[in-house]
Image (cartoon, rainbow, N blue to C red; front, side, top):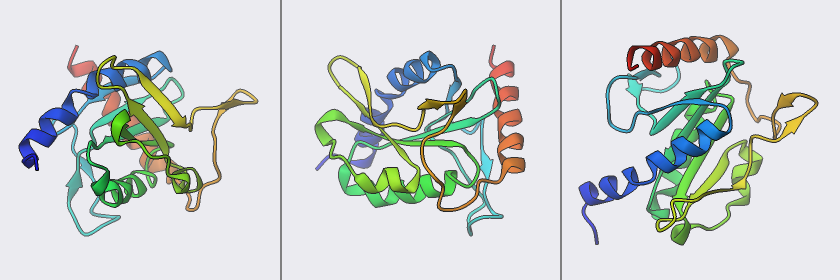
Amino acid sequence: MANPRENVMRQRVFYESIKNWLESKGFRVLITGDKTELVITVRDLVPVAYKIPDLIGVDKSRKVIIVEVEQNKKKFFEVLGRCMLWKCMATFVYIAFPEEEFQKAKALEQLGVGLLIVNENSNEVKEPITMLLKRNNDIFKTLELHPLDPRKEEQLAMQIENVIENNR
């Protein structure tokens, strides 16, 4: 069994591929991982002060996208819990797994969470469960089980844009 530090290092290999994929979809993206340059306050939602997603981005219409990367399918429910938290403040939320760990989880689509898989050899990103379908000039995919807080998403979009601008 690999130690947790090795797992995190392996997980980071996927960040750049996912970032490039998101940028090709029109998002400005930050790889946050365990960095503290973008700490998201969540104490008004859960009994912890803050969380840091793996990747976060914003599009031209200020819709936020968050991706949680996990390389161990045994941690599926842990990462799903983080994604459900992100659904309260981001329009688009994805779980990303390595291709060899991939098993389609139909429940993700019903929960409004997308799925990305990354090929470890080619760094190709595939989207088996998509959230970025275009319909009538709007980008959306699923009905939400709970409402998004537009004010919180707007605040988060401004925070992301500020960090991106400061890192140029």
